[in-house]
Length: 327
Image 1: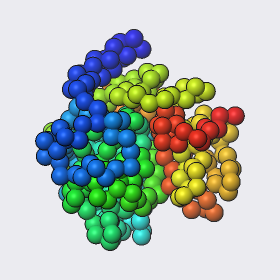
Image 2: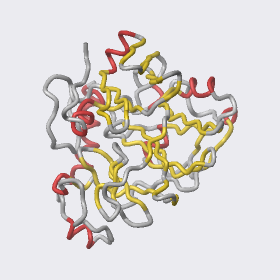
Image 3: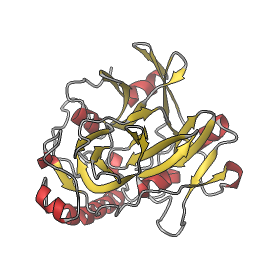
C-alpha cells in the first residue's frame, strides 16, 4: 500500500506541476486560442483550473473502431466497460481506453453520442451530442471544475461540464445535453447481455499504455486531486456513491456500500441492484487486477435510467443540498 501510494503521489505531483499556475483567467484562455465568449457563463470562472494537458492534449476518439467480442483477447471479464444499447445496437467502451481519451464521438443506433469518462471523478456519462438538432464533436479543454472534466464543442468553442452535460461558458451557456442511460459494468456482463455487441478498440494500440491505470491507488487515497471545494463532513469524500438523475428534480444519491449490503434497494420507484464481479479502474496499476467494487444497475418500471457511479466529493460539489443516503 505504501509503495502504491507513493507512486500515486509521484503521478499527481507531475500533474500538479503543470496545473499550478492558474485559476479562472479568461484573458489567458483567449490568448491560448479559445474563441469562447467568457463574458457569458453560468459558473464562477475562478473555480476553473488547468488540469495539465492543453486543449485536446487528451485526444478524443472521433473515428472509433470496433471488433466483435470473439476477437477481443486482452480484456478480462471483470474489467469495467461502459455498456450502451440504443435501438437494438449494443457497444462496449472499455474504461482501459476511456481513461486515456475521456471522450468518444460515435454513432450508435443512428443516434450521435458522446461517451465520456472523467477518471478523477470516476464519472461515466453518455450524451446525445446534438445541439439544436445538429450533431457536433466534443473535445477536452484541459480544464477542470471541481476536479471534473470540462469539454468543448468543436463548432462554437462552448465549454460544457461533463458531470452535468450543461454548457457553462460561451454563447451556448445554459443549454443542456440530453443524457442517455448506460451501464458501467463488467465486460463479462456486457458480453452475456449482448452476444452480438461490438467492443471499442484502440485506433493505434501503441498510442497509450492501454490497460494501465495512471492514477494508482487514487480511489483509496482519502482525498480528491485538483479540487478546492467544500468536502462533505459526514462521509469519506472518496467513497463511491450512486447518483440517480431525475431530470429537473434533485437526484437520488446513495452510498454504494448501502446498496452492496442490501443487494437490492427500492427508492421512490427506482430499483438499485448490486452484484460482484467488476474491478476498480483506479486501484492497481494494472486495471485488470483492481479490487472488486461490483456493478450497480438502476431501473424504473423495468427500464434502465440515467445514473452514475462517482465519488462522494463530486456528488457533494454538484448537489450540495442533497444528502447522501448511507443508512
